[in-house]
Length: 122
Image 1 (tube, rainbow, N blue to C red):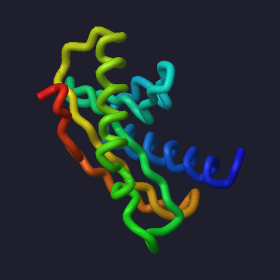
Image 2: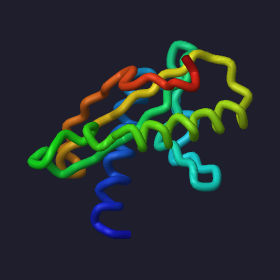
Image 3: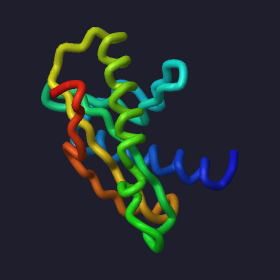
Image 4: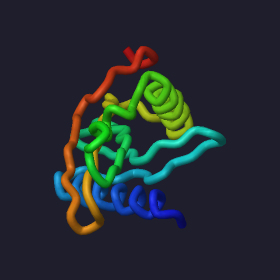
């Protein structure tokens, strides 16, 4: 596993720990269907939450969530639509981003709830 992959996995682990500590139930991690992928699918208060995790060692260049551009949003929304159809979900949904900055064991986590809207589900 490459260094960025190790950091990314540690960041996702930290995000899952953060979410479960806040009362979220993790339904899936790294859910895939063909080329579609969702980092974390969670539930809280009967809301399905699709969480994109962005991990960086530092913010010298930019904040991690700034890497979630319109192309990435479109990819996440299409993946969420496939997930909803596959699992026949009928709950409200939300799209969150979790920024994880630092080194394993010393991360700063920022949770951006309702980070973007989906034109598909509105």
